[in-house]
Image (cartoon, rainbow, N blue to C red; front, side, top):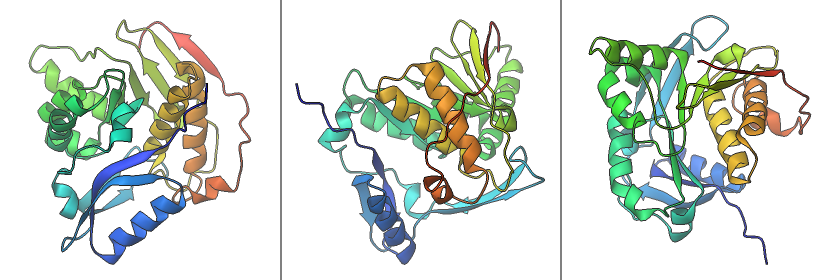
Length: 261
């Protein structure tokens, strides 16, 4: 039986400006399938700035504008995306994540799992919508410590505990990451000690590596070890291009199971 080709695709709206065309070209150069990208002619491409305070990504100042990204893609999902193992709703306003899920979930295969990533700036502003979006996940939830505490505090004021029905990947920065299961059992992976330069994109690196390996059949613990390793490498410089030159030099990373989060 011939093995099917595995692809990574992107769904979104890019403006018709130079920035949008540059991003599209770069994605294609990386081998990313771009048939899910809608060209928003006459609009500008979304942009954002993150200013880190100190030598970690624990505290960040955020500003940006959604521009063309303020509207959810109107096109139907390309047929090949409908049978994806995983669809990841990356950083976005929670109201958009909710709208995306409602619009496209019915177009996916029954085996497709949808993961969702939170963002502290949106969680602080809209904890209710952030929680509602995260609860829609059918695969994994990706969340950092600040986002977790923000949503948990909002729920505590309403006499409710923070709990999800799918595994949570709790991102802990320089301490690594922990996968927390619905029964509250957990497995932790320590991060590789590196020279920190900038943490922008580390969370996206972790999610993309983890989900890609899971789609390839790698078990969760090994997928998380590899994902944390590459997320650690990503903070040594701006962007991720510098990682492509390092090759795969993965060494064992200390991991340990725990019974609670």
